[in-house]
Length: 304
Image (cartoon, rainbow, N blue to C red; front, side, top):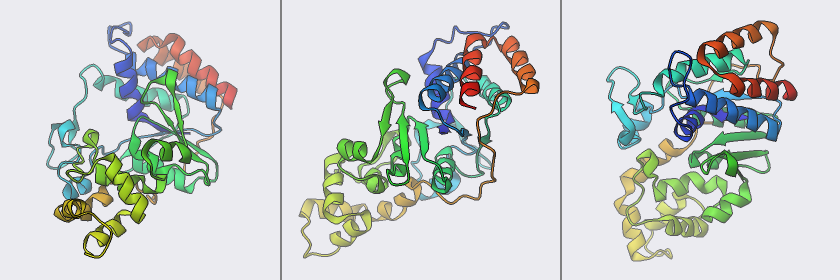
């Protein structure tokens, strides 16, 4: 099980009231919400291994260099010499460090990669896994990794933990009219406002799906737009050719990396050791994590 960790703690923060506080008055709604999500996921899906994938860089410069609009609407502060600062609620920011501490004390490895997003870590770990993989996210970009043959599916959280959706090949086809292997090209054509991806003006989901059904992939669509004899309407041909510069670079932005050089980690779920239990008790007392942490510990213990 690969967690798109930021996706989950943002969802937890917005899903629970910030009146949930530690003894010192600090908000802990994101922490407790994430722990309850973790307990539910481990209990329901019974993974044997678990990794918290992390955004070491949520907006990599190399992606921005290709498509400057990429996630630009989510930037709180540009940092010329380092990672841009993402718009994050003030009451969430201090909880992120504590989330890392709690995950570490639970024995859950946190894996990130310099200059890459959690999506890329997920893509790489999924590609090299010898086990079936569940990816937990609210991000549609990761639908491109779904692969029934390899046993990779997405546990989609966009509608909340009470309405989790298991995304397989058939689900992607049913929702969008494209195969998972075509989803990245589909997203390039359609665009994605949540990532600031402009898409091809005038090409929506239906047109994008129809083009991919007819030609197979983006490269062939571009090739067809340059060949007058191909069965492509004049209006669509014009839209594709007008976006030639964007279509040349956007696929590199949208494609999730699958070949990062990541260190091996022991992701096996294990019973919490006595030493870690003391650390967890200390964290629970300090931050008032109560039943949420107990449920997570119990779920991990049952899965070990």
